[in-house]
Length: 134
Ligand SMILES: [Zn+2]
Image 1 (cartoon, protein in one colour):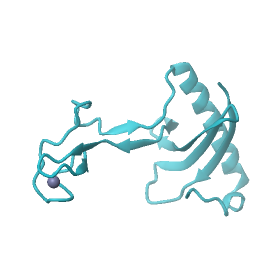
Image 2 (cartoon, helix red, strand yellow; image 1 turned 90 degrees about the horizontal axis):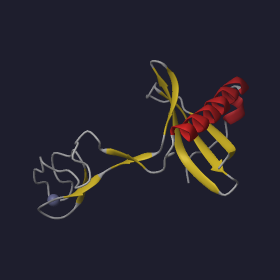
Image 3 (cartoon, helix red, strand yellow; image 1 turned 180 degrees about the horizontal axis):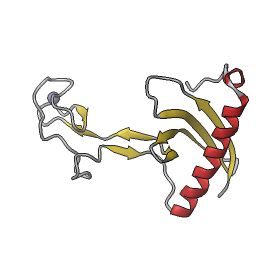
């Protein structure tokens, strides 16, 4: 499996650690959007797209984000809300798609960070029309 295209969408928002989003195409056949380029204390790294885990309210069955203190539908306190699959309450973000091997992760990260550095060199005008939205 190879990366065949990378599009970089630089971000200058309130989140100073988040540098950009990347959309990556594999083998001209499969696209993964919203891979994050993050400025860490030891340099840039990538974070795979993730979503917050959800769990049903014991009272009304509404799906709330894990870690919520109150149900967003019925307003009842749900202090013990967690999913069956995540005994660790801190593990409330799950990757939507991610490499399985360290080798492929390293390859992907190198590719994305290279593309990000190239995009940065081009300057702000180069990505004035980029749009991350659907
Ligand atoms: Zn509820």
